[in-house]
Length: 139
Image (cartoon, rainbow, N blue to C red):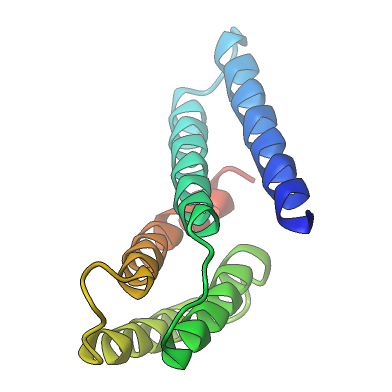
């Protein structure tokens, strides 16, 4: 139940962001660079939400405890990147990538949920640096 409420809230926030960007684009004095950055931020936010939703849609018991630890670390990385700009997210990103490689070396079955989790975490790791950079730019 909590997952569904959180998912609905996330999608509602994503829709609000899209509305704000649409309103910005209709302003006659909108600065083109800011508008471009806001649109890119909106797209990346939507992409990140899709990756997280994919993880939520396939929430089943995972066989490898290392995968659960990777998920915990990914949550900490996402939180730090989005809410704590003073923390060295690059060091956290490198640690998360290293942990992801360790889990991949365990060679989970290609059809397992672990493989899906690894893929989605990799996609999240890839999108966060640009998202956080844009967040700082459009403030």
